[in-house]
Length: 347
Image 1 (cartoon, rainbow, N blue to C red):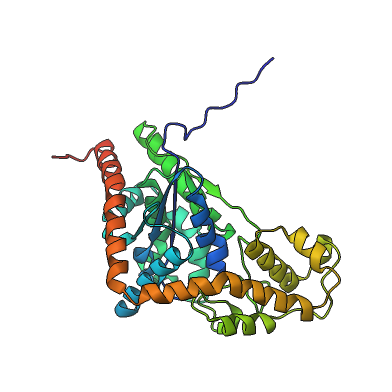
Image 2 (spheres, rainbow, N blue to C red):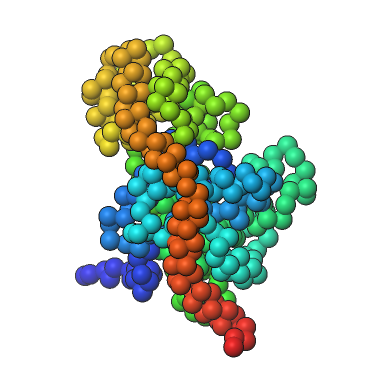
């Protein structure tokens, strides 16, 4: 007796990766290991890659306009300096492609309000505050994220663990649209969660994610940090007094130790087990300098190239505008089909 393998629901769609990052401040080592490094690697895997600076998402909370422009260019520089090639990938900022906002409205009318209120990110951002004073955009943020993905019929989305809920919502919205209109129009995008350090933690508290919004600059490695700053931050990173364990099991309950081991492994392209095999039993006086040297070797070229790119903002703007044109060529026909499916009269 044989069992038929279920058909791949995304088989009819072009294999396509989409992901985005908010340009709302300094990008960090966490952004590099959890996103940018992986984005560059995807270019070698034979799929279309579309990467977006999601400036429409950024304004769900107040942004100083000139700062947002600068941060958008800086984020673009970080993508390019990290290996994302605008000749091989589509790189653009979201607000230049109006299909994102138009598709978001269509999907707002498919998604349910209750779905939005269940999103943990909304709860986190309004914790201790009056949620009714938050922007409507903050509540509808996940629907815009769904539109970002579905406007390109993306089949794969690199996400961190903290974004899995949003991708599940995207799949739910796609499924509801397809069911409501009796079509097989939107794919069910799959999450890509891979690598040793998909979730890089704070250098000051191993229980918290490394964040560009943390009040302490010492908690993170910024991609704009110079070599001396990177080395100093790793030397001062919080650890417990015990040496590195002889096995991975020995990292249980040692959040800061595990974080530094994972960072070393991800930067070196090795496994955490490899790192423990090399450094197990040794003290932090040995491991931290080794980690600092490795981080400087990997990150200093990125910060140097970012600084060079930022010296020519007009060239960054041209790159983003060219990318937006390529993105628009994919997005507009898909938007037009969605409008037609929903009964809009099209000229």
